[in-house]
Image 1: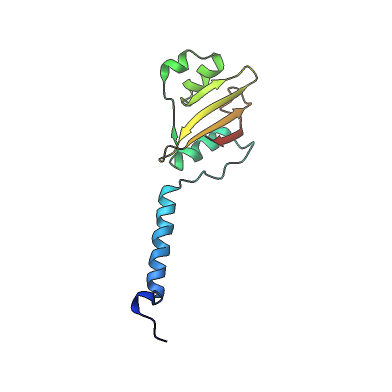
Image 2: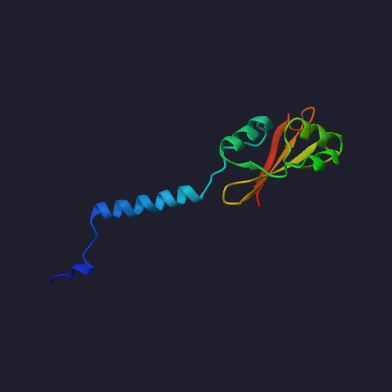
Length: 124
């Protein structure tokens, strides 16, 4: 029985091109988190996020001036994406990737929290 051309199997070259196109589209639209580790140095985690294309959200000087002393110290050190700092020494920071996906990171310890460790993170 002879198959018509419309039912013929695609060539391996065609399949490879389709797979490559799909993989490229997925890679372009799926910005990955860097290899963050709990308790790693927060300055290093911050740098890794910036180098991976994540953007700090909330670069608002007025917001920094109205926070507590810890939050002001964090802002003055250049971590202007700080959302808030608690009396317990934890600070949270806002991020966004190119697709608009949000990320919250949390630091703890050190003299001003940002010079402490990465306590956690989560997509939002």
